[in-house]
Image 1 (spheres, helix red, strand yellow):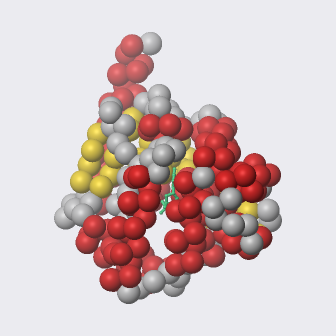
Image 2 (image 1 turned 90 degrees about the vertical axis):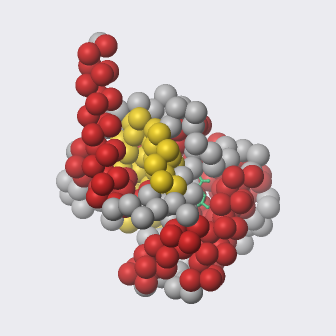
Length: 230
Ligand code: DC
């Protein structure tokens, strides 16, 4: 079973996806981390961020590996071509570079293929922007998680402070979130948007535990309905 969780930056997708996966005994895939890793590699290799062909080659040939502790379905880190980039992909520099990189059709093509390969290997909660619309349009459960710009910026500031990477300046983070939403929503290839059959959940002012519980109940109901039909 695939649970797709899409939505804009800072809506709480990562926390919700991880917690739901833990509760349901699913694996979890953070597709944003994959685009960030490719952006990191492009910056490191000096590839122009508007060179679709060169970016595509990089994305096709790179080896992205999620690092797990034994038996833990939640990745604790990510590497690309053998470089541990777990923290390096969360800097402001990569926040900016990832928009043009993730807008390149060639990069999306390569990442979509990798994500489909990974997701076909069992029960997964997969978070991103285009999981329910493009990567897994037949996902059994689709969630589109949103929150106001201000709430998302506050959360990102707290997250960056906890991680010790990225900006902790509210105004800067808010401006970046608005810029990234605009770039993600207006790109020609696989833009950020809710699938027609997604359930839209606004997490503004809501306890994250309630959202997690809500999604887990929906997952159990979806599974029960599927086994009744079978
Ligand atoms: O979820 P995130 O903020 O880590 O994602 C980083 C960037 O990657 C974000 O600007 C949009 C892009 N992205 C995407 O285009 N498609 C996805 N499935 C996941 C992320």
